[in-house]
Image (cartoon, rainbow, N blue to C red):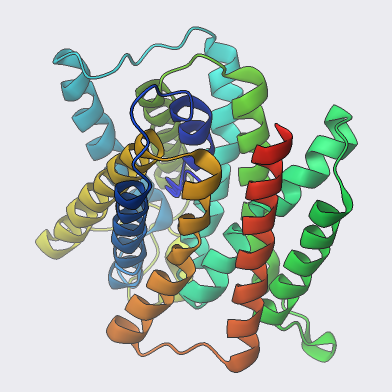
Amino acid sequence: MLRLCDFANGENIKAITQMSTQTVQPGRAALMILAGMMTLGLTDNFVPFVTPDSSLSQFHLIRGGMVIAALVIAARFGVGALWPQNPMAVLGRSLFTAGAMVIYFGCLALLPIGVVVAGLFTAPLFVVLISVLFQGKRVGPMRWMAVVVGFVGALLVIRPDPAALDLVAFLPVCAGLLYAIGAVATRAWCEGEGTATLTVWFFGLLTLFGAVGVLVLPAGNGGDPAGFPLRGWMPLTPTLIGWYVAQAIGALIGIVLIFRGYQLGEASFVAVFEYSLLIFASFWAYILWGQTVPALGLLGMALIAMAGIVIAIRSQRDGA
């Protein structure tokens, strides 16, 4: 998945780089993906450092601006084109992927990172449903079974209590749905677009969302992490800027490593290693924040990963 993240653009990387004519090197490809996911798992755990005294809008405005500046400089040196062949298609696709990341990073202030990442990784399950319901594609029983298993895993991670239902716990799954729509749109609308183009438009919309947020939302008071998604502009400090820079650099490094992994390996093989983000994010959350995942949550993560791996392999085999 291109989380690219961000976390945010894995699907566009798959669609573009799987056509590479380079020699397949599965060992190096796996290492690249693992390194990329380890990087993203670490930098996503940096977000709680800024949640008490910053805002989600400010975070996206500043971090997105930094990434865009780096991509523009790279483009000036001939590393990728930034203007799309079909601007409206790329804009539409970016609306969904950027929306997914707004929810994802907002949830990091409210929920354990393992829950948030697991919710985002329900995206392949939604891709199957969207492909069947809206594109008329046919899938076999293995993928249908994987969808059911994956959603059971999501429920085990979220562990909703009917007596005290907290809808916030389902927000990461909403992020997974939006990300899935963006993934389908990447394949259907953005064929032939470059990775740099898709990435800069994705971060461009995140920056725009951030700019609107800091203008519309009240400044509020620092100190409460739960206020992170609801505040506007907050006073900048050298510490905050340092964390923004670290997150921006980590996002770029992670994207480059994932991109390289898909250049070196077959998409169906490489996609399996993306689910290591569940492990790395939970590991860093334990190291940095002392967060632990209960046994049912671990089982749920395993089911989500298993479902996604089955879907990736079967989809590649069937050409869907």
